[in-house]
Length: 424
Ligand SMILES: [Mg+2]
Image (cartoon, rainbow, N blue to C red):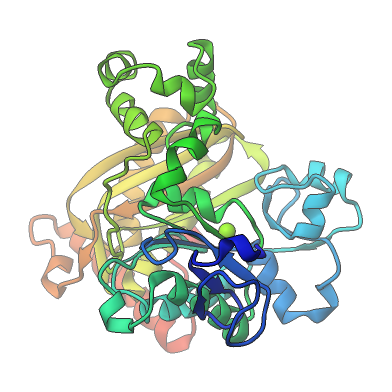
């Protein structure tokens, strides 16, 4: 945004040096014309930070030959696009698109298999930079997070907007990744704002404009309004947020249940959810997409065992145990089946997670073909040695000891030097 004379007096922020000015057309400090200006610039406190084409950006950072090329991160013959860079998007490629379709649209694309360990490490570096701004950070995925900056003005002696611009520059210069930032007075609008001028966006939505801005947006912009629900709303004549506002809250709740009142509130720009800092792990999961659909129960069980081993490995590595086991299956691209079950006591052992998930699998896998299988453990707590002892069941105790013996051999001689029965 460039400012003109008429903007004198409206607070402006230089996106290059993060200095606040008074609406002059250039930054008084560094002379840059790269400014954001907004009447509520100094009042907005809720930040949504979203990395631009994250996985692709990391790969381009690490291999300069890729910079000008269309890059797709995804894998396997049957996989889908996990992320693609902006050059690939020009050809119509987008995330979640099946790989074969993406390659038809952009045959010259460079395909890279996702390297999650690397992306997680970069994500942690970015999070460390965010922690300098506020303790109230809520990551919502590997590449995006909310930061509640309310009350931090006294600590930093700078406005949240200035801190946000500084954060984007630090992430770019130190880590080599670009982000888009949304700044508003609640989560809902901050997240919408970060999506508006991607990549390298810096967008503000103030209280004064929120209602007008929202009115013309499609209802699908609201969290929780997925494809199916959107379809239902359209059938009921609700296309845009302004259509929602014509109905009162009671009608919406009677029609759509609990989400009705959420629709009503968000349609009016009201979102009272607070940022929940994510200090603890809530769940650990692993999944695999098959190259070909699988219906054979034994083959599915083999895959299940492998996923249970991965989850168990992570739990052990982090010294955690979990109580709820969730099985995830995908019979088709758009359909996901999940089934959960509680264990009598928390565990980190692969064979116990497997025994529980296997029962769930037997209930649903009766000849159905699946394209994805995953397993997760939630209800996480810290591992205490006594929880490993199960005095009530001597067979289980034997199995526990066997698994721990294999683990300690693997620790000494390298991961996977000894495999437990099913993984062979
Ligand atoms: Mg992103």
